[in-house]
Length: 351
Image 1 (cartoon, rainbow, N blue to C red):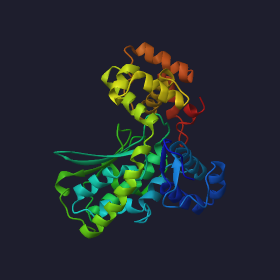
Image 2 (cartoon, helix red, strand yellow):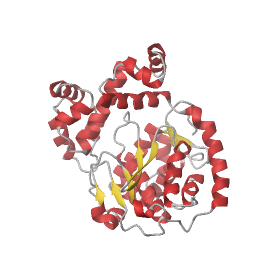
Image 3 (spheres, rainbow, N blue to C red):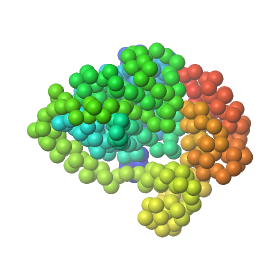
């Protein structure tokens, strides 16, 4: 299925890859897709896209059906090169590890109009990070899929010299065993504020054996022509959510502040939200609820710090908000969620 403009989508290839695992484990993949109104015959087409919310549901559904919360990580680690069309090659054909990682971040729009791949670098090394808008909850399985792909592709850039590569995972340790996690052992950190792969600085100038400047130029021309077509399709609702998250941390998340951040009037902001069937107040509450859930489920941050990150001036105000969302205190939410193994966020999804 091809999603309409301005909806939040991802490229169909990760969902198609998920289908390989689902069918191998005996699941009725065609039936699963049909239940989500996805055309089975179209999902592997180069231009196929899937709504972000639907994709997240699919990944969670498959993980729960097979009863393994780590297998998606291992499965995507084994994704064949080329499965993601040109996306693989813009990195693998780059002249250095640094440029390869940067290229993957540059062409994010090839994969999604709302999820992002971010490259950052400091004196210690470089990080390839994966982020999904805070409007979405329970992104663990989908994020682990990206991580599996990213770890293996990083290893390929380094020609296997990955002894000092580190992994950061934004969710707690999976309850099921994982070959990838066993391989990286103590170099994996869980319940982190970010999610991605870290490469030490001394390896960034390494020239991959897959480097191919001629092929890279050809692929980049093709990829950037697609990105140019899609650049106007970024969901306006996701842009508003991103601005809200930024302004929450800055301490002023009023409608006026967010509108200024986006270079629009408050009236235009309200009109856009109305077109998407919501209001500023309702969307802000949803964003806060989603961020609160992630911090309560995936981290051990103190309640006072979570309240601050959500823009609440008093912890008592934060506590009242959480109780209105879930019917229990923040401490109770954290305790009850941590008691759930595979379906860690099912309590929150049912409220």
